Image 1: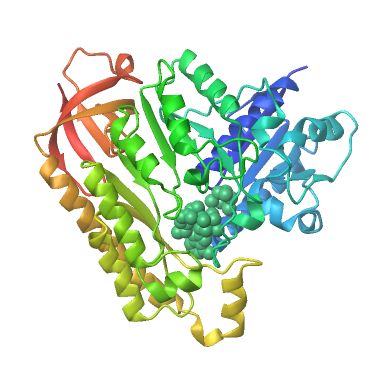
Image 2: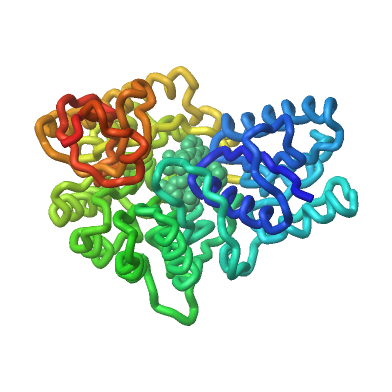
Length: 454
Ligand code: SAH
Ligand code: SF4
Ligand code: F3S
């Protein structure tokens, strides 16, 4: 009997990749994915815990599914991901209609859990280990992910967890310690993707450039993996994220500069431009260390787009400290940056300080004001990068119709910039999707470019 599963993924690309693996595992148990939660036999929420807003979103979605279950009591509800990992079985008290809870360390147990719930009619089943022994992907030899068509790039998780313990961050608690996936398992997946017509892969990890540091019996790092993936026929573009400034080695930079399939984009968050804040964040580098790295990257890879993340309003962040973050955007020659207001997270040292030294907390209104100022600096910086591109020819991988104007197509250039472009009459749009084409830029905006197909 075929059952159906609806999965909603919140949070980062790591979660998206996990969801694709979950669907692959469930396919072997006879579950087909459905886009309609109202008919699904199983609803899975893959949750994110990174900020308070993210976990609130998880609980409100479960609440909605609880109402749905009143109408269809036979539907089973599962909570997975980073919130599940941290809050565990307290979910059953708060939301008794949830049938199944499993965290990031137990995805490999999903087949057993669904059998318990569906075949043995168990309720409130839970799998919540503190730390798994191997990369989730190394528990299986033959599982094929069910890809969710998010653009043309396929996510390939290469390292899970994180060993850094930045003082604001919940990831080490929700994802456990760093575990790298075996190179062969990664290469097998990339080959399968290439055989299926995928042209671009994005290698994923919270600290993707720390890949391989945890191997006991093997010396193999991200630069080695770059070379190995580069040799896979059919793969045309390789991306990777997120890099940590302390782990990006000269060999990796060299590989990006030399290997044509490696895209010139590095996501390497600075988080703050201020040395005192960086120290309290426990990031392990100073602003000068970061600038030395970005200078080196700019020197070696001329067309590179360096992108990053910033947190504003970290406890005790002075006006002057904040302005150091604003300054860093142009000093590091960033192309784009994500910004977020600091949000206190369970178990993290920063949240404990904030409680103890309440006077250090930054008021919400100040956080919002700082967000606006920093966003404006980033917007200006992006515009300064994009304006000189008018007239240039760019190679893009076509993803599909442009969001705002269905007459146009949308693709990304090597630097991952979004380019919407016009196509001459008579050319079938669909025939261009997932192909690499040249376009000429006609107009520049901060977050996208307009072009015409050549
Ligand atoms: N591993 C990456 C970041 C992963 S989390 C790195 O080390 O840079 C993704 C982003 O969420 C972070 O870059 C940070 O900017 C933001 N973030 C993490 N914890 C946060 C918190 N407590 N409040 C606000 N933003 C946070
Ligand atoms: Fe979080 Fe820091 Fe690890 Fe990034 S490096 S995931 S910010 S603890
Ligand atoms: Fe969120 Fe977990 Fe990713 S907390 S950002 S889903 S690693």
